Length: 279
Image 1: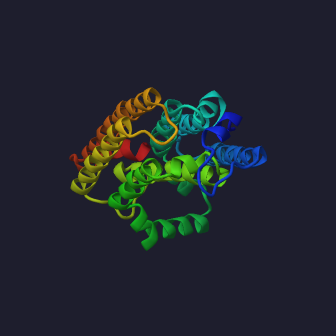
Image 2: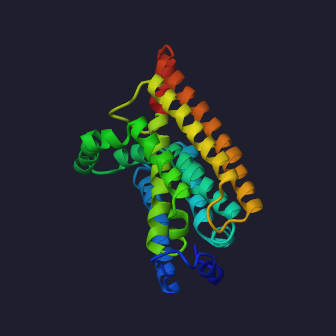
């Protein structure tokens, strides 16, 4: 996530903003590392605590830690450094942090793992939170879709893209929103974890189609209207990454949406019920 010094010069002149010291960016890096480490260690601890119960599917664990890795690649290392000067690298990081990592981590079913690991009292508290009106509002597909697509339009159609390269606080908040909005939206689409307020298949399908359209239109808009300070060729490649990379993840989401719908509506037999209980 560390910025290069070239980035400060690249975005100089933005009214009312001055680049902050490198110490602030280091602090943001440390905070991001702590969040990812807590996510990995917390999931691992839950696996260890619940090891004597019914086996937890290995695929769930692989998905979760793959999501952690995707987020880490987006936030640290060569890609994250290049993202401060390359719009293409930034967009690759956006796809990893805002689409791939949320999808993989949702497939890791962390809420289900927490409910089977936490003490009874804590599990009941978590269940009440999930059933609360606030959780119901935020996790509704329409609200989740607005937060996800709306946040992206706000980032690229306003000065926020320039602002986040000058302010580490803005940078952290924007990237946290990108991940959380992507996670909530993905969770609202596919039934992996318990959902006390499931939306109908019609609603989810309509919202997903609208989101795909909004994401694709934004990519085309960026192709013709790159953010300030971005070269034309870099902007066009980045917009294509957003368009085609987003389509690839969206196709997976469509497949998973219909697979979850089929699993929930197909006729049940004693054999399939037993398989579901074992999983």
